[in-house]
Length: 295
Image (tube, rainbow, N blue to C red; front, top):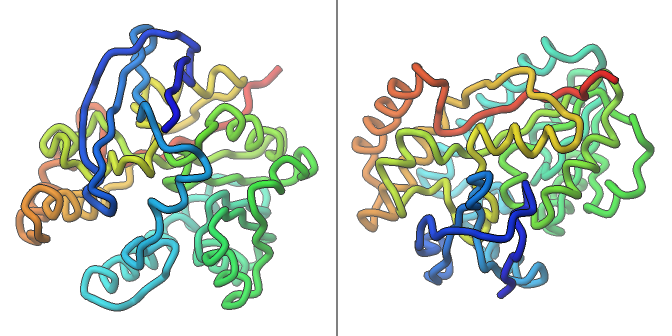
């Protein structure tokens, strides 16, 4: 285990306990989330060494890597993913001035495959070797490992996306700098993360699937995301809810709480979360649309 000595967002060295919880998904191990005493950023601390993190993803139930279609839950996941891919394409097409996209953490490549079929120039980054191989073989996509981000030409892409990825990244500061570098000056960066200030996070507490320790190393509120991006001359232009995530996260949370998936309870939790989110735009997951500050 590695103990983080400085806040990843502000560099402060004093933290307070926030939550102790279990890895309900896989290992059964217990982890702590702490909160920075200066900027209130929350992160898993201590956490597994970087070379040990991979074993916490080694499950056929980690669908984004395995792409399994067996079982009702997997079928539901695949159906929701197809719908969200269409929604993401429509949103990005309406926002972007160009048609080149880099998807960081592209998993098995379904999103950029959809974009490629519609005439976009696409590329993916995926650290998981099996998922990378699947995307290359199944869709003939250019998928690279994370080293590419260091080697890529600056200003190469109109759009850079990280869909539920940044919370997994050990060094969020390096990743934001890399993402900014490969963006064109008038390009877009889209970052989607779970929101621990959402109603469902408060309702499920330590059983909330959005914490997903130790795979999720960082836990971004809207405030902390803004703080991180400002450090690198980036500005949030818009905050867009991912309303369907409240149902998916609630279903997993019900399983962690009760030991089984309670579909009806999860459905009503998802409904309530979305209703409660309206006043402050604090949905279960949020998309941050980011641009470079003009100099």
